[in-house]
Length: 92
Image (tube, rainbow, N blue to C red):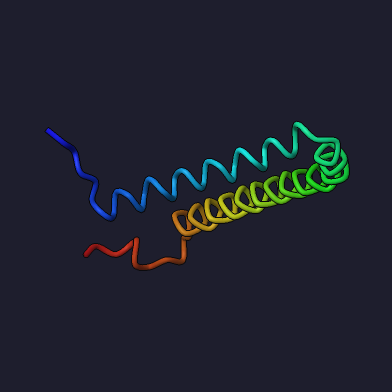
């Protein structure tokens, strides 16, 4: 029995083939040519700086999240222990 691909399946196969060829060409350029090596050497410090900045942002976000959580816990503790809150002392 012969399998016939639909137009959608042929399109997907073509796109996957083209995408694989492009990725292979880029990887080959970066790792198999002298120009690719020079480009990687120029780009590496920039990428390292980006990664360092992302890590700093992540640490700052974590600190802000911890401070927010602690502030929220403090507010909740104060509300639970508020002697002036009449809604908690009166029966419903």
